[in-house]
Amino acid sequence: MITRRSFFAAGGGALALAGCATEQVTADGRFPITSVLGILPEVSEFRAALRSAGLADMLSGAETFTVFAPTNLAWGAAPAEFRNGGAASLRSLIAGGRLRLPDIQARGGRVRMLSGIDLRVVGGTPAEPRVQAARANAAPSGASASIVRPNLLCSNGVIHILQGVLIPA
Image (tube, rainbow, N blue to C red; front, side, top):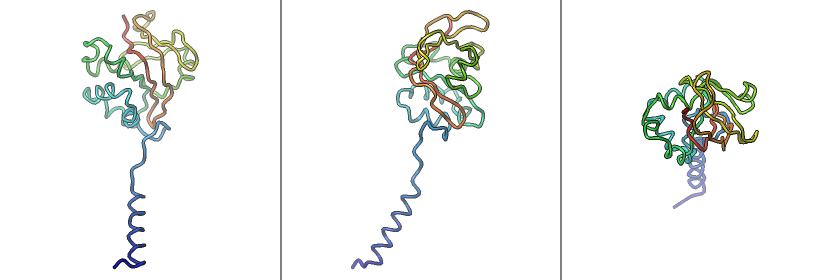
């Protein structure tokens, strides 16, 4: 027989268990880059490439980074030698520091990536700038891409979603 006391005891246990639920990951600055990339289905292939190249741990640590993450469509359209280039290729989509769009504009629209190439703003709108890669101290070359989802805040940096992959010609 279920008594009032046992009913409330069971309900109290359920409430206690509900309080143990894991926190929902969001792009509000509380979670690391790899966790935020994990909730973005449009960049799942890029995230898998980061993991297989051994860069996921770096992007989960305390050091700050800015990641220019291409969409799955853009990643799939990139040349195979770039997609299969491992950490060396992926470093051309990662910059040191926490750079939101206003920070990039304050730097004259230039960002030095971990690979040594530069990313430069070459047009677009303030809310959706177009960027292009350039070899160090050279003019931008190769395809350009728009930042379609900027300023996704992470505890250790910022993610900008790109509609293309930036490879200097």
